[in-house]
Image (cartoon, rainbow over all chains, first blue to last red; front, top):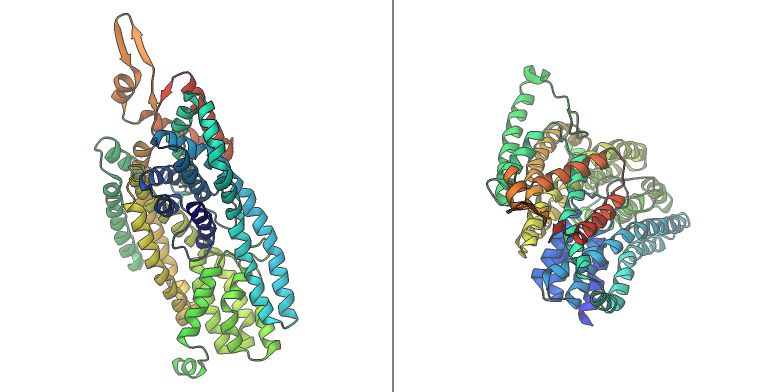
Amino acid sequence: MLQGLLIILLSMWMVLDQQGLVLLTWFPIMVALVAGLIMGDMHTAMVIGGTFQLMALGVANIGGSSVPNWGLATVVGIYVACRTTHDIEQAKAVALAVGVPVGMLGIQLDVVAKLLNSWVNHRAEKAAQEHKFEKMFRSFWIGPVIFSLSTGLPTALCVIFGSTIVKVLLKAVPVWVTNGLSIAGNMLPVVGIALLLQVMPVKKYMSMLMIGYVFAAYLNVPMLGVSIIGAAIAYYYFTVEMKKSSTPAAVATATDDEEGDDWDE
Amino acid sequence: MNNEIETNKILTKKDIRKAAFRYMFMACNAFNYENQQGTSAVWGLGRALRKIYPNDDDYLKSLNNQFKYFNTTTWMGNILLGASLAMEEKDGLAALDTVQNFKTGMMGPLAGIGDTLIWVLYPTIIGSISAYMGLQGNPTGAIIWLLLNIFFLFFRFKLFDLGYNSGLKLVTTLGEKINVFTEAASIMGLTVIGALVPSVVKMKVGLVFTTGKVKMPIQTQILDKIMPALLPVALTFVVYKLLVSKKMTVIQMIFAIIALALVCSFFGILTV
């Protein structure tokens, strides 16, 4: 009961934090950190959070666009999975089956919240024109309330009904379906990766992709090690470029950026 | 010039810090389709502006100016709002046009840089590392991320001060440096992505190839011999191509992959 309540509060804080202070954010692995503490099962939470984190990689809600809320998917996924199963592969399948649709729903809920906030803005502006400045300041608080409800309500529904429904389903669903969902969980990170590649200068720095691949696939260097290699190359580039720009004679170097579109040459 | 600013000080350090905190908290939490972050700009600067304009009518003019459309990366917004606060403190209502032009002129470029650095590259690099650790049940990466965010919160207070203290000058001098920095961060990001594909995307073929008496598990005997993580690399390429060519939307892609996994699981083509 307390766990359920804390999970709902987490889902409400998550969106406010992401859009404001950016301490916890709504990135799945971060949300999973807190959800793991609440549920008392850090291992399961981390595996689920890691899976969703990879799917969320290329997803940035920039310029006011609405994106699937993978943090929301993580919260409900972890809660329902911890409540229904102790097997890690099955937990992943459950989290995916519950989380993906709820995360998708996050898009519509985000749009609704932003629409409702137009009304908040009107209300505040109107109060200001009437010189009721304190009323204007109070009105602003409706904004965060709307946003926190946009994630709190679906989470509450999943907390109340989710685990009962999933328990019944798990008994009825054949093994190949839960296996299939686990396989999907292992494949879905490519969506995040592909989205990322779209917004990065792939063509220009194709060689970096290859370097990273070789170190990880052939030499089994862990991710932190690979990122240090990346940082080393980036640092070199940075110092060389800064030197170039400080000597005005060398400015005329070709810096044509054909940023991130295609792989094929 | 410096002396002039000194004598014009209305706001204390505390006022400025408070304004920064108010904007950072509200940022996109009052986001709407009309003026986007305009509402949050009013919420953030409202109290400080009241101190600058004790007269109700003047105050309202300034508020209405801030209510106008505003949208940028919120971290970068700190610089702009800090600078506009300084301008209004110095010149009062006479600064309103300058403030508006400065904000609208700079929010685009700053959003371009800020969104890339803060919402694409930063979560890519730290997110990949922490997700990779997370898949092994290890929360260290996530904790590091949290600590970094706490550090950046202080940094963002500094950005607001920076905008307040140096305003217009700053943006032009920073411009070029930030571009080089973004490129360097892209290099690091792509290296990490290159490592990510073989590390986290897992596909295992369950079929066994049999000719006569010879049995060859396709995954270990054939695919892995050609190249490690061959299928994940191929899948990444296909998904990337389909998304770039806009043949499929992201949501269609996600459900297509789930469907494909289910079908492959049913026929035993892929195993866990």
